[in-house]
Image 1: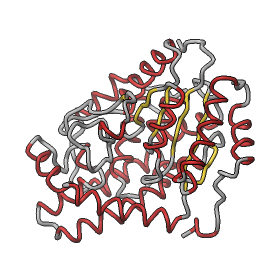
Image 2: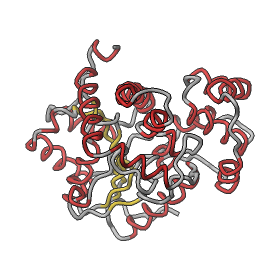
Image 3: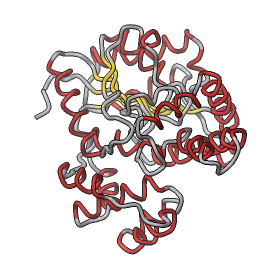
Image 4: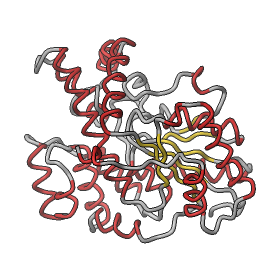
Length: 342
């Protein structure tokens, strides 16, 4: 049962490279909170550079949770994530500490914040027992189209990870994940919730993504992949499908050159950012902020002051509306332009 402390959960969502992690640290410092990772791949040990995990120095002494929970050859389910995350959140609320959930894995974050219902044992058993099919990019998608055409229409046939997740959900529950998602949109969150989203103009976001990939390669991403391969990371593992790791593993197997792998990482990261935005934009509770403006310390201080005041004094009755009004007043709202359709 959720502790009745009156404190909200603060969630920070958005596409990759939009500045979520650094904002979460600054906010948690200001309000005495702790950070939970909302990234499905940061749960793997050793996958540090490619998932953009913060270093201990970058965490600035703020406790972080839901990192380094599994080895790269192990599977992990959204059901397991939900259970762990909710346990941590409820423990923090009992201590009168504000949980700050920050990440870009939409289904993982939604599963914690909204009344998704999973049968964890069934999901984990399916994950462990799943046998790879000869052509997963086609056969899995075709199977999904038969049992959940709504999800199949939404997913690209090559989006293997999400296709498998949808199939796992259908097998565990006897119903489609799209029905669960539709129900979630119309239901109230599990906790009082302040949810912000960071976004940037599309071309600026793509530039940030490309620069981040270059920095990852300079920081030793290829060496990280080589070490992880020795520990069981393969293209057949769940972790091996993560962007950055998948392309470098394919390059090491001779599918294409290292230069081509880097370009594919950039391309697939940009595509992933578009899918993240598509997912989060459906949620009316998210108040969108201009991530570029938040690179200025004065603007970040304005935002943190607003959130801190709402945590300490705000009513939990109409949090998204109150937050949106205050964000609009201080000029930090993100306004989409025609460029967003690129």
